Image (tube, rainbow, N blue to C red; front, side, top):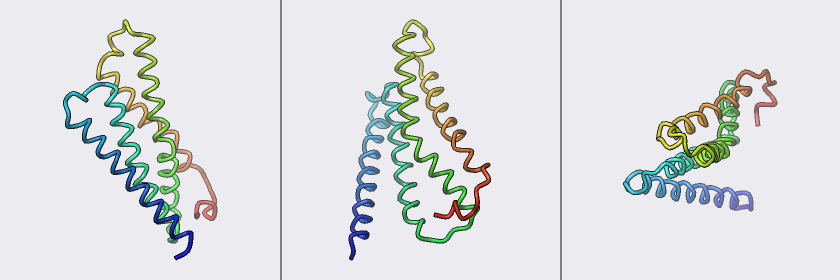
Length: 146
């Protein structure tokens, strides 16, 4: 067993640990009624983003060793871009929510769950739209193959 294999094993253990902690925290937010607060909904969104990112990178680092078709490779790079920005976008959505809640504290919209849904859905839509150049770009196939 060489040093590269040891690093891969450690990497998978860390990803599994992160997924486990995010799942436990998500379950606490979902099942305990006292945690059903607007800020915790954003934390739940962040946990879901972390779980999806970890799962994607586990698949990605395993799949880079296999030869895949160019069409699937374009999808893989699109998903790579989405996975790379989704955690940051979750923090941005939470920051925008907190900013509007503090600055516009007299406006009733910013105190509702509808505003939380708007922020989170905008985050998800934004991250999928900002990653679209990987689908519509004309990249040579040898660049897309890792």
